[in-house]
Length: 165
Image (tube, rainbow, N blue to C red; front, side, top):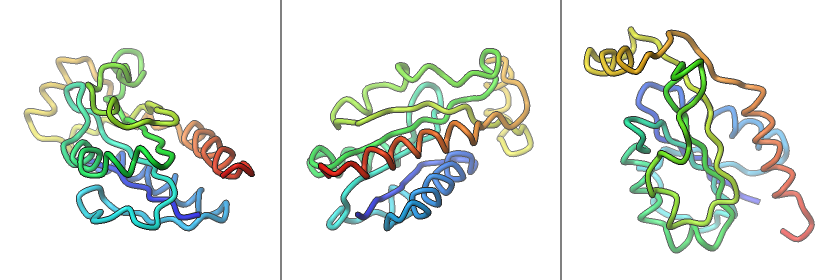
């Protein structure tokens, strides 16, 4: 089984989560293609997709939404898992509410959508981004929960390993 793992990331947090997911899937014996959404030209031969995006101002990044629009028909024929990485520390180190990411996932049937907290390292952000994060009450630090990422990936492995697939 061949799985595409793709993610849109502005500062690397979401990409690093995608890399961890890809490695865990490979470790379970799946063939994994790891590409940025804007670099994917075809889903031919792909049996499942895991797509992630950073969330900015309650929206997925344009490269992820464009991917979903370009491949909408094909994505509705194969299993798709999606994850969002939200601003960490708003409030109390929780990720942004997944229902607030806009209509991006409404046109594609998604087996499961998961939201993970990200990281906030002010030195990696522009002045505008730091100002917005400060106004939102973001707390500096890396709040990614690697155990939660592994558990979610394991649920994908379990689903894809079912005999009916």
